[in-house]
Image (tube, rainbow, N blue to C red; front, side):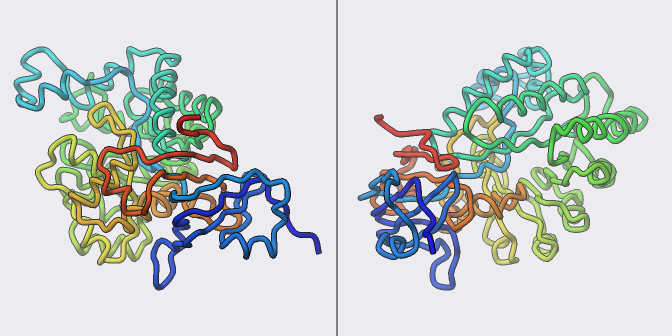
Length: 420
């Protein structure tokens, strides 16, 4: 019987972090482990001597990972990657001034500021800005990224953002997962307190935008911001069910600044994920765990905005929820490193290093419905791999602000090699 032939072998790692959990080790570590790859997919992981018994390694490119850690590529499952220009002046002023003081100076703030900037920016410039950010994300070990619309809040500009997602997927090696977030806010030119105007925009979403997104295959997910000052739970259900009717899987921003029923809605639908979760009740955590809703938590966002009530990961984990980490990269939280997100998750939000690693890989893959393809190092999975120049796994959260990446491999091809 012919052995399968590998075209790449990563060998001799201090630790191979497979993220295939076992009873004794949630990270499925293999000391001095090796990974055999062929045609962009992992054949097997084991000690090299064991791989040689079942796999033809003759002629395979060998990467010697001596003294280094091998792990799955990060999956960044919550970003607002595409946006027009930065809000650096607003961010800097917020260190010492209130939003009211800043707006009195004539500066727009928050989502409305980004809506204005994105509407004013051409598709080509949006593409180039997002591509630049993605290049740095790859250098930090991210191999798959979810990208939301949501700074257009009218069809022409939402379409512009979704088309940028399509272009990004073709222009660089990372996988791009597209989400329609036309309900990130209400259009700034309307009166959101007027029920008739709110209903008119919701009908625009459900009757025109969502069908177009589905018809043109522009996104996989439909998302909404269910929170005080944004969409109610009832409005969110209307929009998300319209998305479901057109084949767009539901996700929801909720409980970021108040609990108005978004997590209960997530459990009832059920949604693929519920994101933020600062004010989620323990009962809602249990309901979401029972419904299989992934909790996407965003440590960098809580840090960037100095959140008054940072999320607590421990009760979510104790309730049985699968957690995922995302950068929430956006103009008010310009974070490109999932390593930094893990560090913040551990230091500020009570996660163990192993829990943070699983949330940045397998949990995040589940939040974008790709946990059968990416997020761990196992036979049949995409060969999305990063190699860290670190002596132990725990150093990734110990060396704060450090970029541990030595090599990044996407679909079996080396796409980053430090000091090459």
